[in-house]
Image (cartoon, rainbow, N blue to C red):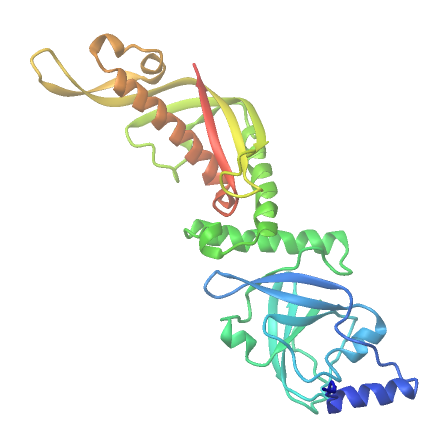
Length: 330
């Protein structure tokens, strides 16, 4: 049985142009990168991109192809005053224009269309299958994580990262986690590093902390809980409790003062609400009253309050694989 080789019209056009020594190159382009778009639902949509980097790749783009696969695209880094066209294209596409780590415009481009220039400034153009944005709930304003950036100087990289971190921080404050956003391992590792720096910077921000200063953190029946951080160590989770990029934070906090309101009973079983010194409770002052369990619970609540104060300043914790292990000193 003879093997049949099917050649499309686009294949034939490409072959003829190569015979005529015109600048037609093979596809897919050799350099690739997966980028992530955070869609309107807060979910991560990954796009497997061919990188159009050489003049020949930029000129050819998606020409001489019969179509493009779902979740695939070609990513162009723009030259100044870049314009695009659809002459000789065999199928419609969507052009997603990106600037500062956000989608600034989406254009539906049709075969034969010329001089396609977005109204907004842009740094990159991602070309995908027609209908891709509607199918994946993607629109203008969505954040884009590009990973290793293409031809961007350090200031632009840092500015884009800051915008991305700001957007993701707002999602974390709204209750989203790495699970609800469907973050990739690469994104989680990124947020591990950012969150660790935020936590470390907060711990070093001043010598002593007072829970009364943090209105965004409810301390319940605790007042004037004063503490500082004696030590912090960071270790990767060797047991892979979550994923290979899980990180454990070991924090030692020293307590210097504070009060707690606790219900206690006297010998006749009469219950009353009394105020106790937190340090005395942690040091066992309630043991003689048969309230060792209460003292144990106070220790856990103090740890939770301190952790909540930390996370109030580092909400990206919820997008990372970080686990606290806190030890109290008095």
